[in-house]
Amino acid sequence: MDVAIIAEQQDEQLKKLQAAFKEKSLTAEFIEVGSLGIFVEKNVSMIYHESRPFSEYDSVFIDLPLEFTLFAEPFLSELVDAGIYCPMKPNSFYVLSNKPFLYSTLSMKKVKITKTDILADKETVDSSLEDFAYPLIVKTFLGLKKTNSVLIESERSLRSFIKSISVSFDAITIQEYIEGDVDQSIVIGDDVYTIKRKWVEKELAHSKKPLNTKLADHDKETAIKAVRVAGLDIGVVKMIQGKVIGVRKKLDLDLFSDALSINMYHKIAVHYAEKVHGGKV
Image (cartoon, rainbow, N blue to C red; front, side):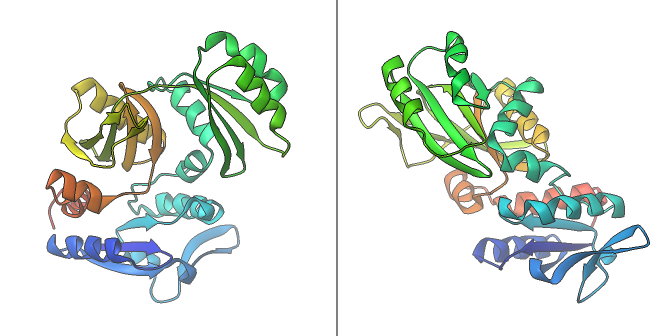
């Protein structure tokens, strides 16, 4: 079994992951993303790799920033057509790179999230406020970038903030504000591993120290569903009071490994072995 690890450069996390694949008797090769392309001839497309035919790989691990969406999406579609396993599915980059779209998609698929309203312009804010109580969080987005994130405690503050927006934006989100411990889970297939950051009232912030914890079964189901809706088999979910506040593909494997005393690199290697060869390698 050959695994292609694709990234801009090979950092320490990817080296550890490559070693974990090797321990499971999986051959893992790092590929710099600049050496890849999609070749199209006579309406037939295929992945081009300058060193070897890409069809020789059984699976792929992608570690690219969301700025690579325009390359990643057709690449993911090519992987599906070629029967090459990847824990990121087509449209996952699109969904994750657009936070308002992510919130909308999660809500549409009945994933429990913080109450959120997505607006196209600031003139419609008043009508949206009927469903919210203060304090609330207002964010503005331009393309892939979040341009503002403000805690609003009164109608007067909200009107002042809305009036102050002078630059263009693509969307505004209004979200309920929830205080409480944040549960951060890494989902690997159907397994969920969770750390907790306690809410420190006097600092009005979450502790930087991660604690080992476990989610209730219904919260595990929410975490798994959230990453699936985002198009992932492996991903990270943040939740407060059982409500999803974020989903991302970036994996903090050392953070989880150290906090939980579990080798997350090994867990991912096992997942790949099971997905591609039923665990038999």
